Amino acid sequence: MITTSGLSKVYRSRGREVTALDGVDLHVREGEVFGVIGQSGAGKSSLIRCINLLERPTAGTVTVDGQDLTALAGRGPRAGRELRRARSRIGMVFQHFNLLSSRTVQDNVELPLEILGKSGRQRSAKALELLDLVGLADKASAYPAQLSGGQKQRVGIARALAGDPKVLLSDEATSALDPETTRSILQLLRDLNRQLGLTVLLITHEMDVVKSVCDSAALMEKGRIVESGTVSELLATPGSELAAALFPIGGEATGDDRTVVDVTFHGDAATQPVISQLSRTYNIDISILGAAIDTVGGLQVGRMRIELPGRYEDNVVPIGFLREQGLQIDVLGSDATPALVKEGAK
Image 1 (cartoon, one colour):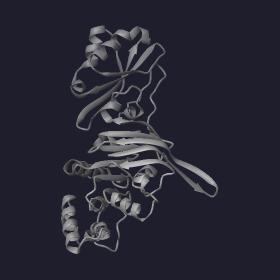
Image 2 (spheres, one colour):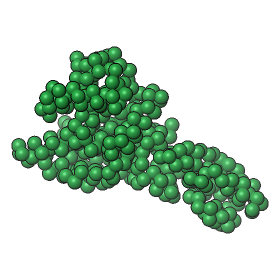
Image 3 (cartoon, helix red, strand yellow):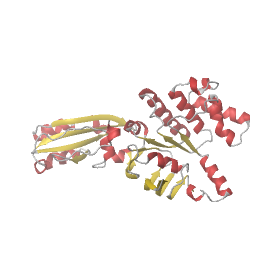
Image 4 (cartoon, one colour):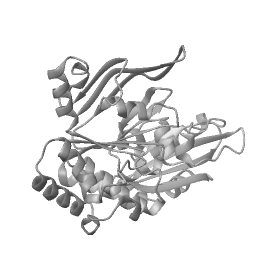
C-alpha cells in the first residue's frame, strides 16, 4: 500500500544542509498497522510528511496504492489536481490535534468535505456518522476548548477519515496524552484498521505503541531505516535492536567463566517450564538475570536472560536443548549487552 524507494530529504538553511532522510526504503502492506520508531531527530516526521507530499522529497519516490505521488509533484495543473485527489485518500492525524478553535466539533470534521465541494447535507451526514464511529456523537455542537485531549484527538481522527481514505498516517498522535487515554486512542486506531480495512502508518518514539497495536515496525536512526519487518519476525531475529527494546531485560554476567543467553518464547512455549527442565536434565545451576512477558499483536511473547556456568564451549549441548524446544536463542557472552532504543526502553 505504501512504498518509498531511495527517499531522501535535505533541508537547506543559511548555507547549511541537513539530511533528514537518507535513502529510505519502506514497504507497508495493505491492511496492516506499521510503526516507525526512533529517537528525536531520527527523521520520522520528515518521512511521514514526505509520504503525503506535505514535504517534497529531494530524491526518491513515494508510491501509495499503486500511484507514484512524486511523479505528480510540480508537473502542471492536471498533475496538481491528481495529487490533490490522491492526497484525499490519505488521512493525517497530528500530535497537537490542529483543530480550528472557532469551529464546532462537527464543523471541524466537515472541513475536508467542504474543501472537496460536498453539499451541506452530505457534509453534515458524513460528519455525524464519523463522530459516532469515534464515540463522540454527543459532542457535535461542542467547541475544541470544551474537550479533553483524548476527545480532541478523536475529532482529529474523525476529520482524517472524512475523505474515506485507504491510508491513515499518524504523527506522534498519542505523545501528548496520558497513558490511559493513549491506550484508548490506540485501541480506536486498531478498531478502525479492522472495521474499515485501513492501512495505518504510525510515527512514534514510544515502544509501548509498537507493542500494543503494530503488526510490523521499522527502526530509524540518523535518517535511515536500520531494521524493519513484522513484529514476530523481529522477535525471532538474533540481535534485533527492536526486539531487545520491546522487552528490555538487562542483567550482565557475574563472572568470566559464564555464558549469558537471551531466550525468546513465543505462543505456547511462553507457558512451558523450559528453564526448569533444562536445569534438571543437565544438572546445572541457572541464574535468571532478567525477564519480561507481554502480549504483542495478540501473541504472548516473553524474553529471559539467563546465565549458565562455564564458557560457551561447555554449554553447547544445553543451548542446543533450548533451540530444540523451538525457542529463539541469542548467546551474548560475558560482556555483550544488546543495544536498546533508549527512548523506547525507558
